[in-house]
Length: 251
Image 1 (cartoon, rainbow, N blue to C red):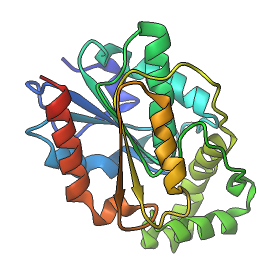
Image 2: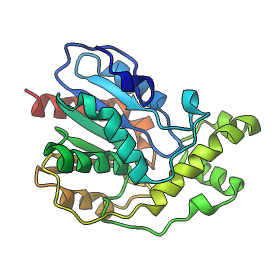
Image 3: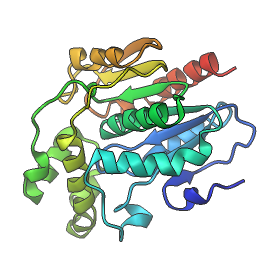
Image 4: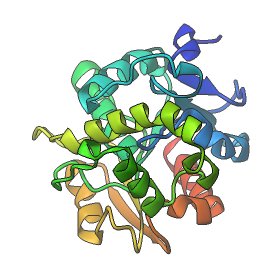
């Protein structure tokens, strides 16, 4: 049965009614659900893949973007709540990793449950803070940041009309990510797998390793060659890692 919330927050690219687990994907700052279409396509035999669509982008571009991780987490939790009677795994990249963690926190406090695994990609642990102010930059400054990280299609960055459409959502996402402050809380009980690029300017190895402090359920750090968007170069390896983990934790 289709979840009514799917029409607003949740995107399903393939329907896998017999899957034993659902992988929920949380996009990076400025990202959209479609970023995870290749993951859904590749994992059809392993899991049902859904991706969150935040306000202010693609088919939700007329909606006002949310500017805090707390607001995004509250809305994401509400949208995903109807799915939480089945095994869920979370995969978040960059800002999406922080958001996935906060939704897992809401599962713990509201339901006493947890994802079967939290995959935290390209993001420092919630307890590791950096003072960052990209969201205060002018438009040129934000575009320069996007070019540095190589996560946005160069054709988009060179199209002034498209940039005008996406920059408000990107700025809001950066505001949410950069103003986030972790409130100390008990650790999660699920396994956490942190993924990082060995030359990512946004995450040091120590900052990625610190994800292990946020769970009692086991921790693994996997490092890949590349920068902040190492996922693009190692898509197959990352998908295999996720699939192997899900086969391990979901009977």
